[in-house]
Image (tube, rainbow, N blue to C red; front, side):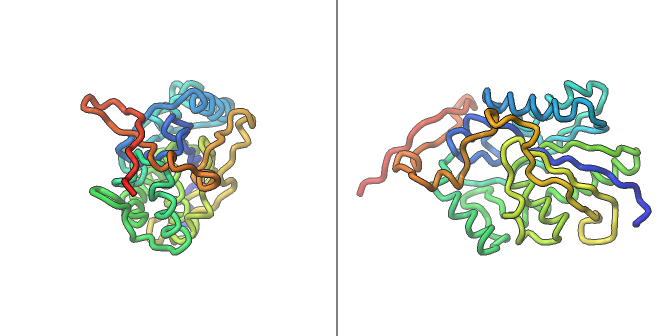
Length: 260
């Protein structure tokens, strides 16, 4: 299949949300909009593609990716936009809404350092990286197939940090053991050249840019990260929690400390 056309996929992480700003886990169920910084980041993403060819814009079904993708669509009003739930973030189960120091960072060590890629996030619905790849990669293959069939050469895919790590590791290395190498900053852009090929996912891929934030001024780049949260953390951090109330409204609250 070496004679099949080359397609450029731009994998883009969504902009910052208030859940991000508080260093809490979003995943699939927790679905906030972009905050002010995230909106500025999305504008920078849109401006990055303002004068470039874009043939198709794809997002997950999450609000934060749809809003980020809309910033690209604003410069390309005639380009088709589609959302696919298979590109939703890995489901973090009981960790969703909780601060990253309340179990998330420990889980990431098991995935990224110990390579336990079949280990699921705790609680009902929690996914493993392997399970996430199993649902996401067929959709990526379908996107490449569709782009090839329709002659679409430049496709923007707006998704999520862990999902992008999983997809890039699977496409570029054929293994989820390299996920850590593809950690994503908020609103980062990854440029991947792909074509249909024989193999497990039916795609051959090479990277030209990974986790690039060159399109954003330093003042717009997010200041929080799960790694930084481990430095100088307070007991209050681990008690920070976002929950959905009975009306489906996302609310920040602080859990009660367990008695000693």
